[in-house]
Image (tube, rainbow, N blue to C red; front, side, top):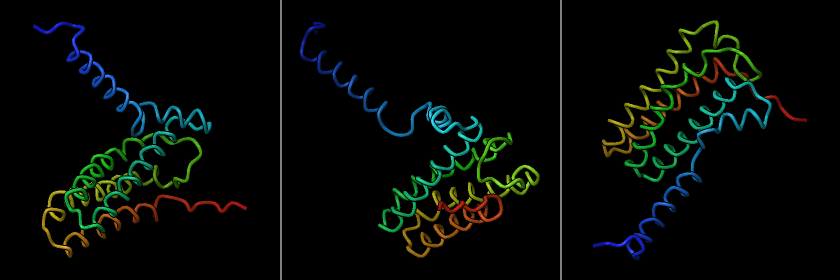
Length: 166
């Protein structure tokens, strides 16, 4: 019979606490958009959009890095995450407001904007399910280029250029 004060229980409790601590200290936090909004004085909708787009950017970099290193499994996993994130794009751009680099046509041409977001999601899904599992460098390269084309195509149409700091 195990006693509560035994080494087994103490180690188990320590492992659980270590896991909880590690989970709380890694990755974007649950309240990241609220913290970003508070720090930068942003509208909560703008903070949510910026948070999502930063996550998409980081995930996109992970896809490219893994594909360049010929780690198709990691590239496929990252593009699966990119698919999930890109599915949220049209939801976070529902409300106009706040200062951001979004052009007004995001809201005036919602159909085209949603279609572009869906193109990105589909290209990420196809890469995750087909290109990354093909074992062919040419297929992986083609898939990465397709994701980049769909991501960048939206930027050209719906995002203003960054203002240069003087």
